[in-house]
Amino acid sequence: MSRQLIGQGVARGIVIGRAHLLAPSELDIRQYHIQRGDVLHEVARLNNAFSLVRAELEQLRAHVAEDAPPEVKAFLDLHRMILDDSLLCDAPRDLVRTRLINAEWALTIQLEEVCRQFEAIEDPYFRSRSQDVRQVVERVLRRLAGGRPSPTALPPKPKDGERLILVAHDLAPADILHFREDASDTLAGFITELGGPTSHTMILARSLGLPAIVGVAEARTAIVEGDLLVVDSDEGRVLVQPDEQALTDYRRQILTQSQARSELRKLRGKLSRTKDGIPIELSANIEMPEDVRDALDAGADGVGLFRTEFLFMNRDQLPTEDEQFESYAKVARAMKGKPVVVRTLDIGADKVLNYAARQSLGLVRDGDGPGLKPNPALGLRAIRYCLAYPELFLTQLRAILRASTQGTVRILVPMLAHVHEIEQSLQFVARAKEQLKERRQKFDARVAVGGMIEVPAAALNLGPFIERLKFLSLGTNDLIQYALAIDRTDAAVAYLYEPLHPAVLQLIQQTIRSGAHAGLPVSVCGEMAGDLASVELLLGMGLRRFSMNPAQLLGVKQRLFELDSRVAARLAARVARLHDPLQIRAVLERAQRTDRAAAKRVRRKSTALAHSVGRRS
Ligand code: PEP
Ligand code: MG
Image (cartoon, rainbow, N blue to C red; front, side, top):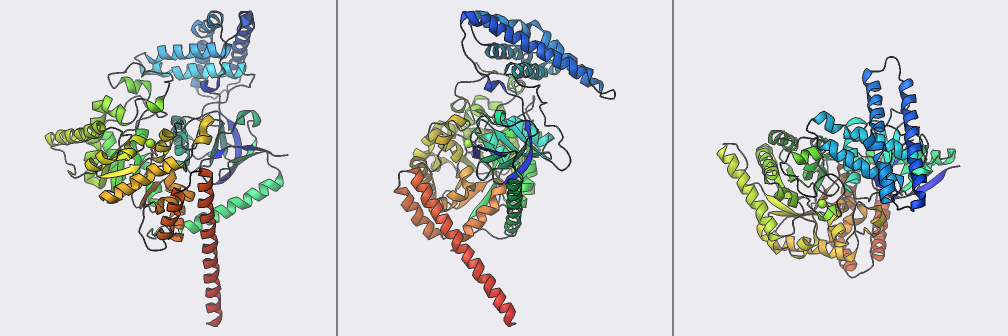
C-alpha cells in the first residue's frame, strides 16, 4: 500500500528511484534542559550510544575485504581513536552535569568546540580531520536518536538501471556542489525536511535538472533506506512504496513529459517574442562555468546572471585572479558576443566560504568564525562582504575586467541598498581598471556596471541607482525574503514566502516602470522569471528581459508565444487593484488556462487544415 507525503516542489518533473537517507546534521538535534534527577539517565544514554558506535566500528573493521585499500582500515582506526578521545567522550558528560542539558545538546556543543580547535590548526591535513570528528559524532547522534548505523556521506552506487533519491533533514549549497561533482549520474532527485523553494540549495538542485521537494516534515521517519519512491515535483508529492497501478500511471506521465520536452526543444532556434511581436530577451542563470553548455543548449540570448560565489565555495584556498579570469573568459568566449552578466561575489547567508578560506583573507572578524550567526541573511553578505575585504573584491573585479576582452561582459553588484555602496563599488571598479592599466593588461573600458535590486530600500529609492548604474536586475528571491521578513531557507516560514504579495508586486512594478522611464534596461533574474504562472504578469508590468535557470527557458518562450503584451498589461493593471495573493493567483491561473485552451484550439485547427489540404492534394 503506497503512502503519500506532501511538501513543496522546487523543480519540475517526476522521477522514480530508491531512497538514500543522509545522516542527520547537527541542525536537527533536539536541545532541552533537564532536571538534576535526570543527569544519570542522560549520561547513561551517552555511554550507551558511544558503546554502540564502538561496536559498530569494530564490526566494520572486522569485515573490511581482504583486497580493500589500506586507507579503509586506517580510516576506521582513526574514527575509533576520535571516539575514544576524552575531549569527545568525557567532556559531554561534564556538560550534561554542569549545564543540565540533554545528551544530544552536550555532544553538539563539544563537537563545535573540538572542530574549532581542529580548524585553527595550520597543517591542512589535520585541519580537514574536523570532518572525521563530525562523522563520528553523527554516528553517536544517530544512536542517541535510536537509529541505525549512519550511511556514508556520498550516496552509494545504486543497482543497474536504478537511480537514487536523497532524503535529508537539510542540505547546504555546498552539499549539492559536492553531489554535482561526484554523484550527478546516480542521483535522480532530492527530498528535504527543511528548506524553502528559493534557498540556494534548491536553486542548485534545479541547476542539476533534478526534481526536488522541500519541507517534507518527518521524511526521514516515514521513508526507510531503499524504499521505492516517486517524487512528483510538479505537485509537491512523494509516494512511498507505490503500488503497481500508481507506478504505471506515473511511468505514463514521465513519458508524456519527456515527449513535451522534445516538443519544446523545437523552439530552441526561434526568436523569442510575444504573439503581438514584442521581442523578449531570455537569458540563463548559471552557477559554474560548465553550466554555460546548458545555457547554449537552451538557446539563451545571454547569461543574465553568473553566480560567481560557487567558484569560491568548498575549497580552502580562494581562486586566484588568473583562475577566476579563466572561468569568466570561458563563459564569455562560449557565448560568442552575447552578453554575460557576471555578478560579483554574493557570499554570506547560506553561502559560506570554508573557514580556512576566510582565514586566508588575512582578517577573520569577530563573529565570522565557525558556528551559527543569529541572522546571516541580514549580516555581512554580498557587497557588504566585498567592501569589508577590499583585496578579495579588487581581485575579482580585475579578473572580470580582463575577461571583458573575450566577449560582452557586464558587472552586476548584489545587495546594494545605500548610495555610498553604489559609489564605493564604482570606485572599486575604477581602481581595478587603474591597476590593470599599470600592469598593461587589456580590458574593455566600457564594461557596464549594474546593480541588483533585491533589498526593498533599493526599490523604494531608485533615483541614485538610475543615475549611477547602467542596468538593473531584480533579484526577486531576496526581494521577497526582505520585503516579507521571512528567511528564504526556513521551512517553518516557507508558507509566508509569497511572490504575489501586493507589496512585492508594487516593488517590482515600480522598478520596471522607473527603469523604462529612464531608458535603463531592467531584468528579473530571480526564480519568478522562470515561473510560468508569473510570466504574463511580469510581461504586463513592462518587463522585456527575463533570466532564469536554463531548464525553464524554453517553457517560458512557449508561454510568451501565447501572450499578447496589451492583454498582459490589462491583466497587470487588474492585479494591481487586488490585495489578496490568493485572488491574484486565481486570476493568473485562469488567464493561463484560457490561453492554454486557445492554443490547443489553434493547434487542433491547423492539424485539421493540414489533413484536409493533404486529402485534397
Ligand atoms: C535573487 O535574490 O533573486 C537572486 C537572483 O540572487 P540569489 O538567488 O543568488 O540570491
Ligand atoms: Mg539575491
